[in-house]
Image 1 (tube, rainbow, N blue to C red):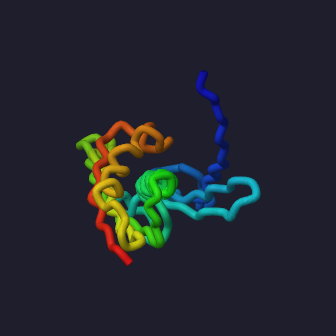
Image 2: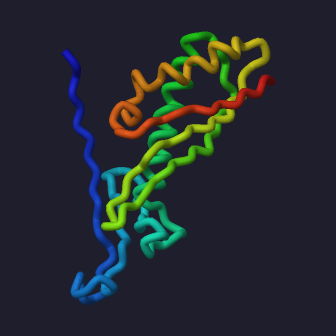
Length: 156
């Protein structure tokens, strides 16, 4: 039987400009993520919708969370396979759309990790691991859009 876990967070709207949501332009689309014992994360909505481009938005958070989960599982599976990873970075790309009524969604995501491995690593196996991660990654298993991978390997 599968184990169940609870995850919590606190999201606090910070956008009241003194009149609440009296009208559409009367309030800011800003909030904080205040998880007990962790640093506060200041957020806003997508700049395309008038959000602050200097703050993280839900789309940034989803894409980076997907990438981070993939990375953590990649590092785990690589270590099990004896592939020594010495550096890992990713520049993921999420593609979304907005319907005429304003409803948005992700259509797809491409993870583009640049992975530094110790010389002599089995690069074919290192590449194949990416295709297995969706069986494990909590976030990848939870999204309803396709996620593909375009890894680059550097041997050192």
